[in-house]
Structures are given as structure tokens and as C-alpha cells.
Image (cartoon, rainbow, N blue to C red):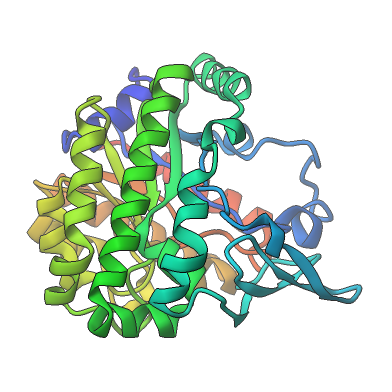
Amino acid sequence: MNMSKREVISALLDKQIPDRMGLHEHFWPFIRENSWNEQGLDPDADFSTEFNLDLKGVLGYSAPGPRPDLEAVLEETDEWSVKRDAWGAITKYWKHKAGTPEHVGFTMDDPDVWFDEFKDAFLAVDFKSIIDVEQGRAELKKGREQGYFSTFSFMFIFEWMRKVMGDVCMLESLLIEKDFVHDFNRTMTDHYIKAFEYIFDQVGLPDGIHFYEDLGYTNAAFASPACHLEMIQPYHIELVQFLKSYNLPVIMHTCGDFRVHLPAIVETGVDCIQTLEAKTGMDVATLAKDWGDKLCFMGNLDIRAYESGDRKKIKEEVVGKMEAMKKLRAPYIVMSDHSISPSVHIDDYRYSLDLYKEHCLYN
């Protein structure tokens, strides 16, 4: 294995077959405190280094909230807090463990609220003031020196609609308030292009981009293919074309069952899909048979096998899918189908890495 981490991932994202498969992983927040520190992990360990991963996120950008006057802690206990953010969204968070935040309420649940109370305030925010250019340069330099394929990351329009409108308002608006959705998506797309023009100019170019759009849930996609093509894809195309103008490969994260959107995603120009949740019925080898010449795949190793603690199940899951992808000679970056939770024992995760080392060579 003579290729560097950056060379391996670059080749895979280009839909080429390098010496070996790639390796990446996401980990739940609080996994150290809730589990792994007690199981022997060095509290100061960097996961990318500790587990010899190939990719590393070195800069994440989040659009600024337009109404800081709305920010408040509304309720709090030793275990959780209820906060209202600068978009007026009220959310309940656990303080000491990971979990999906509970959506309590939303202020921007009507087109008039967007146009009258939020849009101009958002456009007036000086986004450059929230970008730490020096830290970004330092982290990119460090990632490069350590040999990682270094990425910049962000949430995009679908995630932002969910975050600031809530799921119900978003899904209803996609169908009955289309002007509202288009105006919001147009505004956010323009913002992200301006922000990343500035970031690329001031910080430098990463090796690739990782953007987040949870397009589905366990049983289906949130929107129909027709709705996606009309309301979402045009902005995805514009974003990806902008990134491609800098010769940057693009990784798209989406949870849930998004298979009905795969033709649109491929048409958009995305290079890699991640995370391919197994519990939704997706199988990476089945997808690769149809799309392996157009997409790199990252993920799909069923987290339930890891959480079971059953080494036989873990081996069947990891080795089975790796060998199937090798047989197809499909570009694959090995990863769980979402992220490693505190329910996974660190020794079982290390066992999965041993299996990766044994089976990662394509030849």
C-alpha cells in the first residue's frame, strides 16, 4: 500500500480504483465521556489519528443566525436545557449525552415571518466576522501535514429548512408555499456561495467538500422525486457547479432512504454518497451494481452489528460488504451506516478496524 491517504481518497472520489479501500468514521458526541474513556481510550486522543482514518474535517461553516435578540435559555435542569436560537427555533438538548434534539417550537413557520422578520436581518449579518480565518488556515495546514484528505463541511438548504421551519412547516411549504421555499433556498444558496468564495480566498482550498442534507427517514424519502427536482435539485446543481469550478470533489451526506433521489443526485454532479443506512433497506453492493461507475460510496456498515457486541455479526457485516465491493471493483470508503454510538465497545470497533486492514486491498 504505497498510496497516501490523500491519493487513495482522491482516486476513489474520482471513481477510480486505488491500492485499497478508504477508511472514515463519524462518532457520537459524548462517546468519550459516556463510554470510551472508561474503556481505556486516552481522553486526549484524536480519533483520526487514533484509528488511522483517511479523511478529516478541518473547517465547518454554519450560516449565522439573523436574530441574536431571540436567543435565550427557556428552561434548564441538570440533565437537559431548552433553548431558543437566533432563528427563533426552540429545541431541547441533553447536556451530558448524545441524542436527537427534541423540536419544541418554531418562530419562522409562515412565509410572512420570513419576509417580515428574518430575511433582511439575515442578509445584513456580516458573515465574515464569524469566520476564524487564522484557525482555518492552521487546521488546513495541520491536516495536510498529517497526510489526511482534508475537507470543509456545512449543512445546506434541506437541513436549514428543517432547522429553522421545523419538519411539518417545511414539508407543507414544499407543496403549498413554493414561493416561500424558493426564496429561502435562493437566499441560502447565495449566502453559501459568497461565504465559501471568501473562505477559499482567505483560508485556501481543501481537498474536498462534505455537505449535509438528510433527505429521508427510515421508510422513505421526505419529498417525492418530482418535488425534489422542482424545489431542491436546482440549488444543489448550482452549489455543486460552484464547487466544481474550484476542482473540488463533493461528498454528500444524507440519512434515511433516499434511493428515489439517486438519479437526481447523480445528475447534480455529487461524487460520493454517505452514509447509506442499512436499516432503511439499502445495501451498498446492490447500489454499486447500478451506480458504481458514477458514484463513490461511503458507509452502509450496519451499526446494529457493532452495537450487538457479537464478533461474528460484526465480521459478517464488515467483511461481507467489503468483499462484495471488491468483487464489483466499486469505489468504497469503509464506514458505519451513520456514526459510532456509545453503545459500541471500543474493542469491538478496533476489531472492525482489524478486519478492514485484512480485507482492504483491491488486488
